[in-house]
Image (cartoon, rainbow, N blue to C red; front, side, top):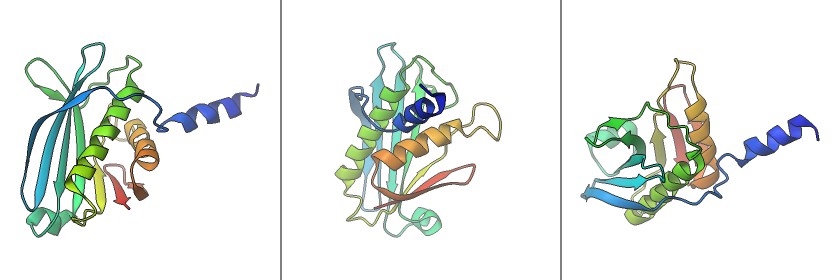
Length: 167
């Protein structure tokens, strides 16, 4: 078998979404007529505890005046003291299940707030870099999942932030 077709097949699987999400629960939620905020917790079989933070902004406020109506996604590895660590890379072969969980919780949040009715048309994510300013591995991974798993019409990455146009 030739190596290139095999590599292409493996790469095309990133973001395809067949991994089973972890069970997750809402830890905190608040909102009003102009924003919604949700914190979601989940744990891997290795007891790595994650926290997913979702924000949605719409209507007339200083955030939408600056950035437009949008949803932000942040997730962190947390410890016993609830310390948020977005820079630690946990490489235990759980990447696809972690990403599947983030996608599932994000879709649930988008549906719960009815993003279309509120005119939310953007998704914003700022991936951390583990090595240097040219380290786009996380951005590439997140972009693959966004394109394949979320209702987007376009995705752009400027080296600092991923901005996806929602359908």
